[in-house]
Length: 362
Image 1: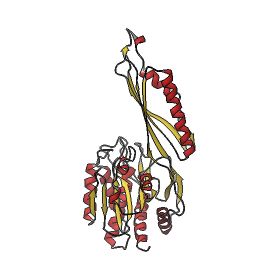
Image 2: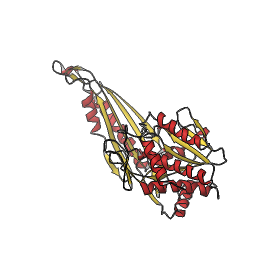
Image 3: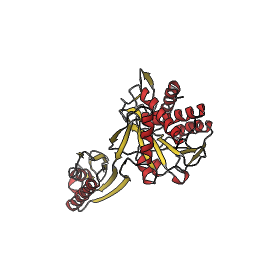
Image 4: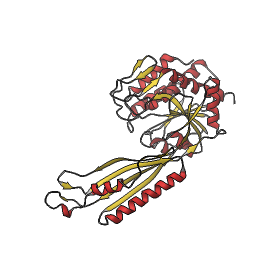
């Protein structure tokens, strides 16, 4: 049986463990100990992702990521009626430790009650928050399941991510020419000026309902009295519409080419990389059908919501695994106002338990 207090305590214990992207080892060791205590076989792939299974055939994959965003060190969770919150100086870490806690509670309940269930496979990944890096480096040869329930969506577990965009990141390195800004500025070629000219040619913000473009960082220069020689510009664009995405690629290339022609003495190098691909769920998708049936069994009505973000579900689907991303009770992700609703967290654990239980009937 799903135990509210145990679930809340597990979640709070997990968020107290610092695990910003790239520093997940402490929480990984905690999860390994918990999974091994359930007699699951636990392994690590070469990238440090945690993979566990019970050795059964055709397992159902349960997945969430271990890392959190900043400011996420020294999280102090507290229960405020039906919400779990931080002290306001950090994020809470519900993204994605609410998903991790829901999976752990469901597994504990299944084993505690000796409930017939589908074979189990667990994948807890690293560095999701910085571009699904852990999932993109996941050793899929270590997984045997063909369906995955990914607990990494915002809102209640009845909220299913119906579609996700293709994400394209870019880095632009601009090399101008340094000079003393007060003595001989005419000998210099300002990389910052070139960057500003380039950025003004890019689209910005929301382009349409499915498409966005953003310049996220600009770094360069050394001191205020020197014409800056080097600048790096980093950004992204994403869309669920491939035609819109192609249009942004064309705009991006045209803008860079224009600036190269305008500043022939500068060196402008651009690096464009696709980090994950779009998908749209269909009614006959196996994992989606499994999740919807379990939600109906719990008396919850599935609601389909498109997302502008990506999850490990994008990568699972690229590797021929039917994956569905469900809500995990988290709200205001990536802010110090983040909170987790306890009734929804309990429902997430119930959903995880229900999909496993239904697996024994199929």
